[in-house]
Image 1 (tube, helix red, strand yellow):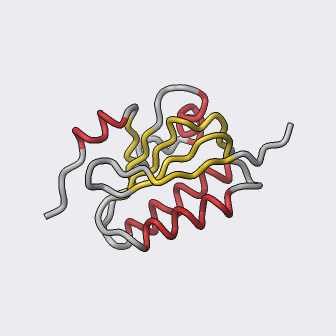
Image 2 (cartoon, one colour):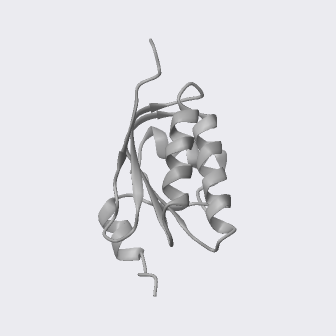
Length: 119
């Protein structure tokens, strides 16, 4: 099975910029995802959303990508908001022990209610 099917789409959450990742993310497609994430972060201010609701598979390289994005945003006191419903992808964060490191939400609605608008 070929695992290079990743779709990256712009997916703001209200006024908060973001992207949605759909399909499968492994080491073969991380460079593509990293480019989109870096570009989105550089071209925005405040919090940044990564929606993983449509992601079917995530490996350790994808986890590393998200931790790197969190660090990049953290240097500017910005927040990385990750939307990831319960299931296999969220389980990766639990097994890695980084649930508390990320601002994880189960749904877009839950994330919207938790986000405080930037003044």
